Length: 325
Image (cartoon, rainbow, N blue to C red; front, top):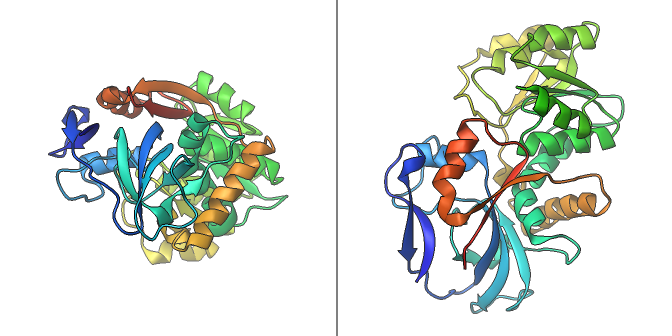
């Protein structure tokens, strides 16, 4: 038996229960991992609320780093004692130990601290997909990052600046504005004090931006679209304020806009794609392009408090859960 956070009903943070679970031994193609650090992401909140569906009861969490404690039949390239990370499916990382398909585990370089890796892998690979696959950011581009002080937003700003783009970021407070500037934003807009659409228009002299990365959703979607230049890309990758209202296809026509709602899972469907994405992330950590700000570390048992703080916008940067054992 191991301890894990379990969800038996949808709702607020209070539905996250600390319980004993039986996980068994790895079967064909599987490994057993003792988690050392667990990343917290807003998608965990979506699953808890039912925005995304999961079969009840379930253990949330889609990112962790740990040590391999057992290897099932048919597994090659991974052995007991290896430090591995995973990000994405299957959910279940809010646990002291878990069973994983060996195909989703990636080796964590010894040079990367396990807390850094756990806080970075899902968000880092998401940033890679957004910046290099959905729309390939290059020198001379202007990008708008909403929630620039968040976990993914912080990485987007750092990486986009390193690629030579002009980075505009929106944040909710002076404190987060300072962080966004530190992370590479050339222009920071405190959206609680000024209209971000008008400010982007001013910054770009009316030209607009090449791409918007919007994880906020309903509250900002229309404004984000308005910030785009002709043939610009609207990349909607989250909905922390709620699901955006439907948009008529004809609304894209006046500026020949592109609209996409990407999922990391669709860009890492093969082992090769997964290893490439993880490799790019770890290489940019090693080179100093990406710096992770782990501002919050909580015991795994306190996951309910973590979700409450996350939804109340009391957090910035990355959050890591540490198993007690």
